[in-house]
Length: 42
Image (cartoon, rainbow, N blue to C red; front, side, top):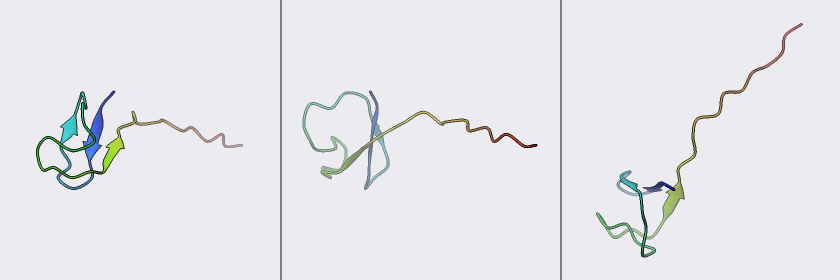
């Protein structure tokens, strides 16, 4: 599962601690795949 640092924006693949290994920031966001939403039209 990929995580993204909220501060520097770098992607971290495997987290072993709660901190970003690049900048040391403590907030990581789970990256999600882009969702394609289709809207039905009449």
